[in-house]
Image (cartoon, rainbow, N blue to C red):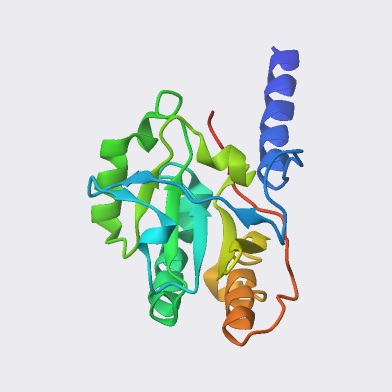
Length: 204
């Protein structure tokens, strides 16, 4: 019995540590890469691509989901990002990368319910077949990619976390995504190009 409890404790501890780490994979984008466009189904049933947003100067692409407590903790901040930057040319585009067969709470109908409940102001897309998130190299929910629209394509300017404190919005000291977008809006180089994404592992 003691051995079983000890094993359970180690397993839970490992899960906590995993939530705060990012697995480096060979695949996926790095800052400076050109990101491919996609066509994914929104919660309103329409297909959405980045190219559809003609007036955008860039995009805040966020891989997120319904069930993850980290994703839930950031939902209001994601809404705030869209409200602040969409009118300046950097809309939020949220993508659920999880396999609904592995996580029922991330099914398309549940996505529709969540978007309505939280009054999402941005597209909430399903990565059906899980083809897009591996291209980007996303490993967590949430995991952010700030893209700048350029003549050569959508260039990745920032990858990682939204800010430095998922637990308490008021305790945030570094707003990574805001700093990146603000720099791009001023035609300046993004100072911090990559941070560790903190969240739940994507359910493949």
